[in-house]
Length: 300
Image: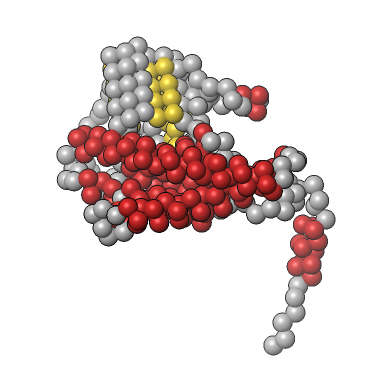
């Protein structure tokens, strides 16, 4: 049987070719760094800070670390260049190749210098998880199996690039982790030491959230912004809550608003909805529902 292409194919193609105002299909000619670049950088960082899992060695020697950092620098520099070129073309900036190359090199230098600090923060996150979860039998099981640690690791790496002003790439990293863990942490959030996300599925932490030290979240927690009609006017404005040190927030709690502060040592119970500040050292809980017991009837 001879295949005959339907006329609709040409019509569909023409509709896209003719749509010159479509911002989704037209505009930038530069390539955007995609998930592959993000995943490669994250894997390179893991090989440095988790050598026994990703290099099969308890510890790397100096020359091996030098090689690993050289690889990380190259991966980062290439991805940052792509992001800067793409962002510049989108904005109509006039940076030349030399300016972008210099900026990408400086950012990548600063990034690899930050990795030991990231390692120290992740070590504290793992220790806090181990101390707070009887089911965690060792740091190894946490590193290999806990989605909260995976998401927070990715956030901490992405946050360094975010603070360096890298466009696109930090968000691509955290969305990569979001797709793998179900945990959505914006790279712009500020998160302190010994941070724990237990279970994790459905956790959302917005861009301007500030979280102190020794905070623990359970699954389904939202630290979000209120929905407003003219949201674009709030770019750069604090829209998400502040959570002070030693706070525990149980599953399903929703806390919204840039002026909302959860005081030090507070405990936020499950399924509460909070849009105003909570003082330190209090427990917030919803009223207990009235439970009714019915005898099971297999015929119902």
